[in-house]
Length: 225
Length: 284
Image (cartoon, rainbow over all chains, first blue to last red; front, side, top):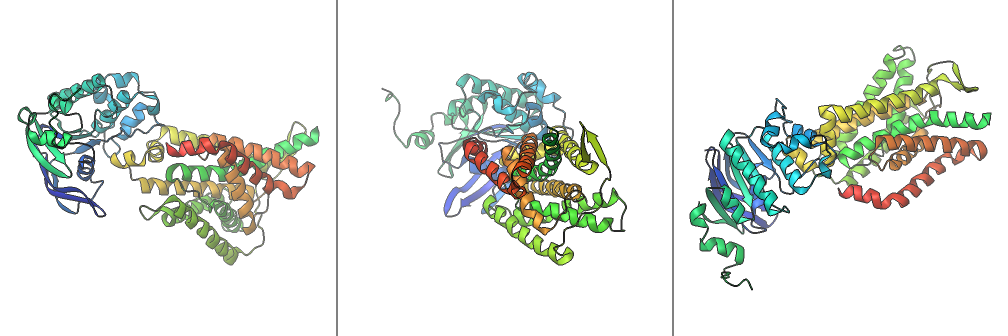
């Protein structure tokens, strides 16, 4: 097992962000965690990355974890290559070659300052920077946020290749269900700090819990106009 | 004409010390967003310690180096008090440095008294374009230039320099990749301690330094640092040059006691003019 989260509770003061969340990610598995804004997705990511201490519950990680944070979080004053190399701050070697192999566009941009890049390019740097730690599990928080659908789809394709060629497990936290379900074979639906549904993405697509989580129980079919 | 050149050259020499004090302020601010009001006292410590060590204890070169290293340690102590506790807001850290500056004043008075010290430096004088300048003043300017060049290389080329920049640029992302941002803050305080100490060590032979030198030094350093938007070392250097030269011209053609008000005025004008761009930088 690559990741096992068991009955996790995270609170900020009086507010409960996660209330008894359990999920697993197997070695080399692609798992999606979907849910609307404010469901507690980022709290879960931060707990897995040990940036937030849970009140109770258990997180077990079976390998090296790296995070692609929400909002890309560039070191804006530094070059693309420096951003990448800092991704391996805790580790050696700091060889950027394998990342350039997977994300060839970054080689062309390597001398450019990170804050001059487009959103999609920055997201690519964020993914590359996380890969520099040679993770067994990549936790990606809101990959598509603020990106054009085509750019996001391209990044998802990169993640699929990463998974296929290196066996890296991915936990993809997404608001865009379509995108998440395209990449992942299994998913969890988070709503108001609780997992309300889980299972293979093929079955979850039509699950009423998914509709509830996103649309508050409204039947949205055919009400577009 | 010759007089004017004299004032400009001696202003440049003075600029070296302002630049060193100012760069210490910039290094700490960039990494921790804390304004270190104790920076002037670090220069005073540098002068006092080197003066004591040169009084027969250690030879030239070694004494100055030990003084600078002592100031780096004092810098770390200030850093531990100011940012050691996680989550301390920069405003509180600023007040802590202000308080520590006052304690440092008491320590200096207790140990060295209030008499100004002026240890021996590099003797002799050099002729530049017909103007005779003390060699030590040229040493101050050149040492500042070399220090700035080394700082630039350090920040641009070394892993730890880049990690310092990363911590300054995005603390959350820095923590995520495993950079200990508090340790980086303390490294910044150590560097600024060394820079402050170096300023004190270098200027004491030309300008006697006492505990009262703290305020003019820290104000001049701040004015230079603010000229650099509290971020850019080389703009800080330029600010120091302008401040040094203008200060000397004002002293020559006006009144020597106007030098500190000139620094204050420069600081105020820049802060008002650049307020917008400085807060934008902050927001990044």
